[in-house]
View 1 (cartoon, rainbow, N blue to C red):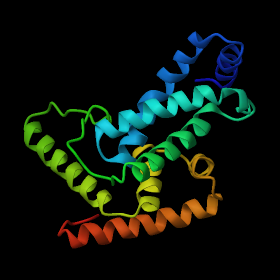
View 2 (cartoon, rainbow, N blue to C red; view 1 turned 180 degrees about the vertical axis):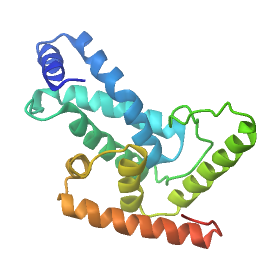
View 3 (cartoon, helix red, strand yellow; view 1 turned 180 degrees about the horizontal axis):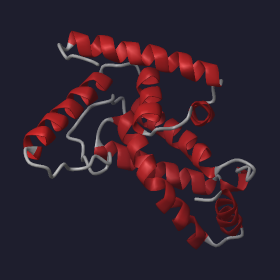
View 4 (cartoon, rainbow, N blue to C red; view 1 turned 90 degrees about the vertical axis):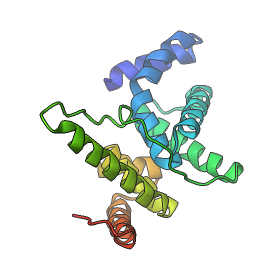
Length: 189
């Protein structure tokens, strides 16, 4: 979504017309769900966190600096919501079956694809199990970079850390994931 369109939608919401919040929700819902899923590990908790984050963001639009992009601001709210939810429920990151469509994996329809798809599905489950064993700060930086495809500056904005710290955390998170997968007996490229 174009920044000027976002700014206009936010202005209309601030003026009291909540109908204009819907396009913002639609624009950021898929990426937000992937982020929440990566942090929470299961769809139910991810959807709860996402919904609550959208509510909190709407209530906070009055304090939103329209010179900033809406996305990183919203993702910071979502990240904090996920962390709060994990702490308050005394729950922990747990992996359940992940809907491949949500993670935007494409089905392969070439001959022999069902076998390849099963292998990919198993590899994804293994990766999620590896992520489950990582500390929260490692998991979240990997989710933001590898699953969300965000740039270092965007990650820095969401995590409220310098760009160089993003690079450092990502390096250590990748090493930790490799070590974890090695412990699980999985070959890691």
